[in-house]
Length: 288
Length: 263
Image (cartoon, rainbow over all chains, first blue to last red; front, top):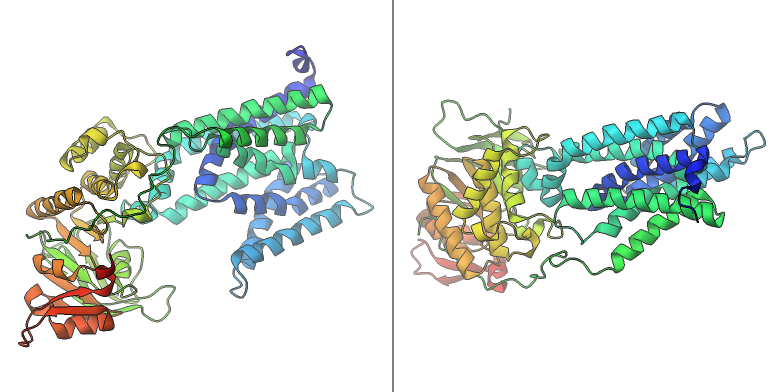
């Protein structure tokens, strides 16, 4: 296969650029999403924003607007459902997300709807417009700047939230900032990968690099690079095999995660197993 | 009433920590800790005793400003450093001992900018002081519990806090680290820093300047000789206390808690 062949098509050039831009930022962001154990909320938001996308398609407005409204609405519904103390937060979220997916499907399958449900669910990197590319570039630029600025705060809160608070940070605000970045990433990346597959670009690269790097910064960069390489490989696989581009990208991302998880971690890549405490020393106190 | 707990030193006050009739609760519910009222001068040490659920961690949360008092007033000299039990830190997070010590510089603001050279110098100096200068590149999660505690102390040194809150700092600590940590406590006190240490080790409380006993309310506060009596300890721990020697005079006794005994 001629490696330059996909580059000769404007459609595939745009697809490659889209996955590179989104992969670089979303992969790096995904490192913190997984570190803060936000994969499930991320999946919930990604699936729950479908009605917003469908309504945007029905109204003929940019899908980006639908993605933004959809993420905000999904976050609100999930937050409200989670307040019911009678059921656990996980159960309430699952019910809310299933309901939102059902609503999105019902709207998309209505007689007046354009036949784009498949695209909204599974994405279509080959269908990205110049506007989508500009949105992805802006997201990548501003998002990466935000990741750099928040890097030390993310690290301190991830290690020890109570200690970080004593350092003057606000762990809740830090988490909200992370969720804000997640919402922005979902609203834009969903154009290319769809509501069901967008999570792959956020979570799979982080899984691929976990345990292989000795600092959050290096792991973040590696996750971004992994997402770019896997995304580009997915577009090439789609071109070569004639498979759906969005699904191909999601699969190559997950393949990267499987390979990364199967590789032995670097020495020291896992925490020490010192669950058995050392012998206790009766304290004599500071005045002894 | 207001709660003051932040960057600003206590103006015109001789005490490093002062709580006045404080009641603490979560989400505005009924108090989980009530009637807390004590003062600590700079350079003093306080041992906080109490059973699990007695309010030790809740008190620390109020002192860090995480909890706003339902009633009363909390005043702290500057922003205190908080050292959680190291098991409560994230051990699978890939940061080095130096990275953790460097986090102390976040207390000086500029959290959105990379650490400065002077911060790095301070972090190396703090690690040297806790005896871990040769382990600065080691991963935090791979260190022993005692070494991790010393790294968190280094973070507090970089933070340069006047008040340090330590949550069971010697639980599960190896002997070498335990001795090192205790020596550091003495040095910190001599520098005029104030230490508040929660523990289940009743016997160790004798060595502190003051002892505070909590069990959902303040049971007692004062010198070890006046607080560590059978009556106070039984009020604090109930069935969880085992008195080892008691001459019947009502004076201080030696005792262990069931929790500590099981360690």
